[in-house]
Length: 172
Image 1 (cartoon, helix red, strand yellow):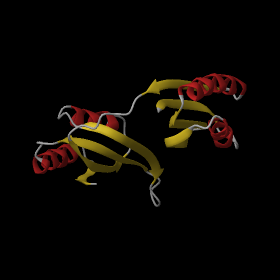
Image 2 (spheres, one colour; image 1 turned 180 degrees about the horizontal axis):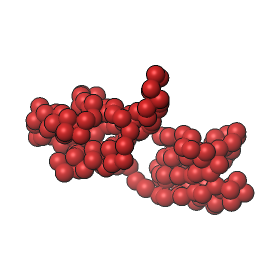
Image 3 (tube, rainbow, N blue to C red; image 1 turned 180 degrees about the vertical axis):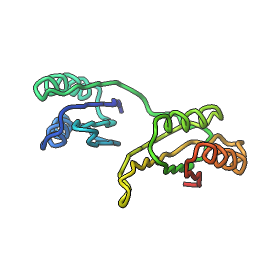
């Protein structure tokens, strides 16, 4: 079975998800995984679609036409299943007063230890009483087998403490 990853972004409005999924359905393709969200005033879609080679080729052509008429940007990329590595999934959560560089710092911490980030989501919200911008990060990392989890957790706690972040690393 062939696979493609699609990414689209455009002005948020009703009907985008319906239009995209209708095209996929008409071509007898399957959406195996997806993320869809509003960022600012833009609606962003990321989805993994599987099916026949011919169906994916037609999907690419139809998405090009659709994205032009809907004033969206679309990226279509054929891909293959990911080869699972020897790793254990762990969750990371961080909460802090918002400031630039939090994601870069956390990504650097895990990258320097050869820990892969599989999924990452962030958002900011205003604190109820003060209106202060609060930053929330949630992610799944893949810790290679052989890495001492207790040591990684201690290093992450030290990292967070040095940067005034409230962070935790825990088993998924």
